[in-house]
Image (tube, rainbow, N blue to C red; front, side, top):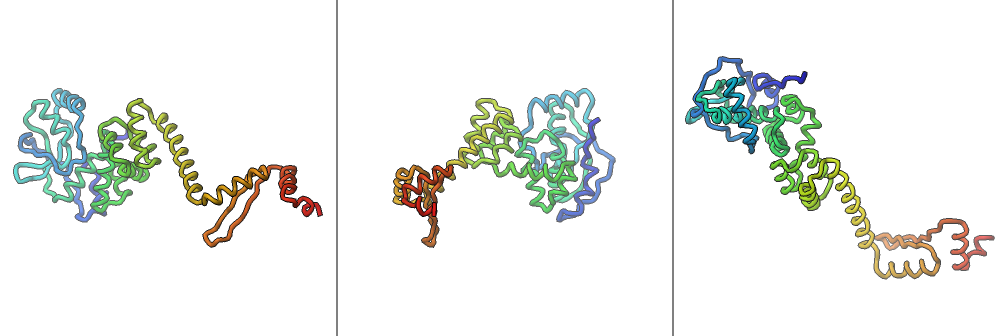
Length: 294
């Protein structure tokens, strides 16, 4: 049986030690039935997209069974402001009901924002960028990755990997927000330069690649980039006159030669050979074979 996630009422004590404004535990009740029209959404909502299909399914459940988990609100300038539970509030409107069970708590802006973010981050249906931005906001509010992990029931490494999604190129982040790419796609693309991230992301979307397919393509692309980088470095280091001289000597000796110059002006002249016979042939061309046999 899957472990039931902790709800908003349970994890406040975890957060209390690290927020700038300490969070006190919320009471378990009583709950009020508030008119839906008296409630306004939170300005700190981590979720930017609400899937219409999922909202419709939740609305059907609410019509049949009612709202099973109260929303969390605080008093506002005009009625109440949501802290947690916007999906339930929206689905209740679709269901055509007039009131919703709510826990009213008088908390400040910082507490309200933290509670709302953690409540959303406990759920599995945020897109990767919404999740990462939620973690970043909590960190900016003074929480450590360890505390966030405990609060949302995830490991520190999971939180850290999620934050890495914010380093992706903007077109890739947009594709992750829209559901065109998955978290696994995003992790693979992080290994590439941003320009290549966007190009490969578009290719993956057009060809409907899974995570294994994009990983294979990214590995080949990264190898090509690394090879091009190494060749470019060699080309920049090598003086054209030295390169021409190396080629002439190499042709004369029938072996690869290198000039390894240092910034100080010193360096090495290296002749490569693959066998003793090849070495003797080189020495003969240099009129050094007699010296080698002495």
